[in-house]
Length: 188
Image (cartoon, rainbow, N blue to C red; front, side, top):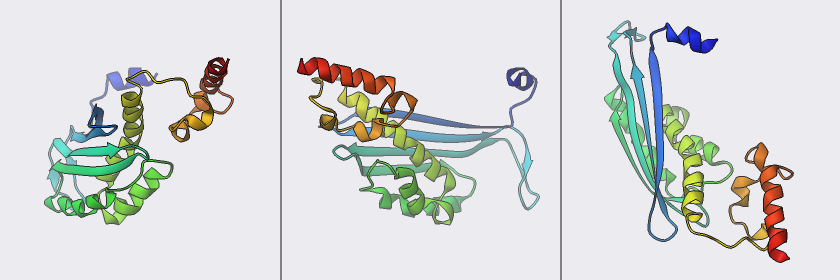
């Protein structure tokens, strides 16, 4: 139903977020995030001024992440396009992200550093969504080489990211059952 409705309507706004990960030396990774907002129609700002269609926000974030524990080691941010030049003054919060761990509470930690009136909502949002890419990119990098089946659940360093992360990874879910079976078979 909604597919049919939007077929006949012109797009007015879009937000594209692109995330990618590269391996780096040792067990480190580099994660890249880009956020781009586009406006497709004229709008009137709060003062009545007409704003033309085009790029509203274009932000680029690169982070070097070390493992054990997953931590932001270095961060580089570019605000390529922003609505006002003053938006770039919010970059003063970025250096405070160095040393932040990617674990439960990551989103709240980022918000406490650069959310709300402390920084830029759009940059804060991009960095928060990069948290999942950091975990998935790190797991992909780690699992790109064959590792032995762990002897027990205690030997799984990434279990805190996985257990209860979704319905498949609940303690009684199919992924845990499969893992428990593999551990049992290893011990046999």
